[in-house]
Structure formats: C-alpha cells, structure tokens
Image (cartoon, rainbow, N blue to C red; front, top):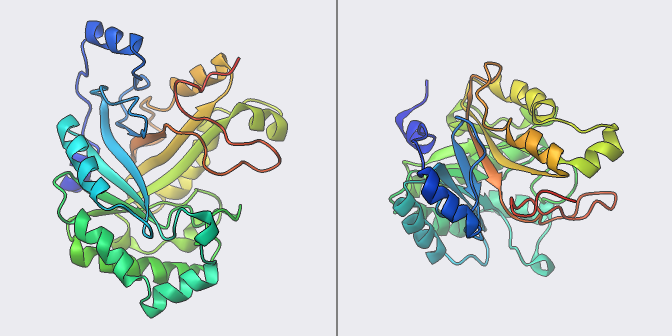
Length: 302
C-alpha cells in the first residue's frame, strides 16, 4: 500500500495537453512524454519537457559541497507551477573533480561529523519546500565502475553511513520520502538499509544500442534489462521507480524502448514511475563507448 505522499509524488496521469497545443509545442522543439500510463518524470536541465503536462516528477541532482542552495527554491517554484513533485538526488561530494576527496575520507568524515553541516544545510531547505519531496541519497552504491566514491564500500559501512545522514536530514525535513536507489545489479540486496530507511526503491536502466551490439551481440530491450532488476527490487515490498532512464540508438531501437517504458505490465505490479535522464552522460562509458547523449532530441542516431 502506498502512503499518501508517495501517491502524490507518483499520482495518476491526467489527459495532458490538447493535440493542437501539443503539436504546436513539438514544432517549437518541446519534448513529449513516451506513450503509456506509468507515471513519468524527468531530469531536464534544458527544459525540453517544461510544457509537457504529463510529467509528474521533476528530478534534480546536486552535490552537498559547493552547492547553490537557492536553486532548490527555484526548482520548487518551477515544480509547483507545473504540479510536479520533486525527486532530489544528493551526491556526497563536490562536482569539481580536482577537489574531490577519496572514499576513505568521505567515510571517515561521515562518521566523525565532518559533513553534518553539509547535510543539514541542504535538508533545512528541503524542509521548507512546498512540493512533495523525495530524497535519493548515495545512489548506485552497488556500481563497480569506480565513478562514485561512495560505491563499493563494505555493505555495513554503507548502511551505517546512509542511515546516519538520512536521520540527520529527517531532523530538518521530517516529511520527505526516502528513495534507496541501487544500480540494480546482483549485489544490491547487501546494501539495503532497512524498511524504515526506504519508502521507495529506485533503479537505473539505460539502453545504448552500440553497447548492446558489442557486448551482447543483439539489441537488448527495455524489459530484458529492467525485468531482473525489478525482480530484485520488488523483493523488499516497496514501490519501485526507474529513477534514471535513458536510451540511444537507431530509430527502430529507440522506438522499441519508447513504446515499452511506460506500458502497464502485469509483471511489474510495484512499478509506480519512470524518470527520464534528459541530459548527456556525465561519465564516459568503459571501453571507449564515450558519453552517450540521452536527450530525447538527440537520442535517435543515423
């Protein structure tokens, strides 16, 4: 059973914009949600989905160092105007790569209180926002690529750190939801922080046709990637969200994903929403696959 704040966050979709208005917006370069009934959200720094009435969740990313906190108030106003909830991914580092610490120093800093002020500063603002807010903290902790300094920790250390910092956040923002959000691989269950620390379970699902062809010898479908991750996630008895979604390839590949990601599927009864990552990849994929551009305006390759 979903609690009321979760229902507000992933509320059922309305009829959206009229066809004539929508056609006009598309001709000006505005993006349209994929077809389907599963609630849809976006990380959308370019504002491509700003006029799409079907979008129910606005996704934000921010670091807890070198962060411009008034941007949260701006995002709140933007979301309120569009009747969207906020999903806030908080990354425990700085986005300035030359000034980042290491996993060891982050871990020590979390446990000795060095970063308490960083967490409080962000969460004090979250507690004042008028939109429904879900916090996604220390995401993809099961990722083994090395891109995140909080990933690949001893599971007990990760769980203790996650609990400590989200407890601090709840002191300032008691009404927020918590999204525990692994990548979705086989080891994800080792990092589960407990039912009191996860109102929702988030997953990441990306389809890169060039990667599929090179590594698997065929085009993988959305369901091929998502189904095993969903099975692992739904075991916790929580609502499941695809917190990061992207797909890039030739027209047929993209169309196959587009028609699947919001389709109601009896195999996914706990799925309550998908959130598209409408931005270029921040970190290069391994083995020379570069940084895919997930933006809908560039996702179809020739």
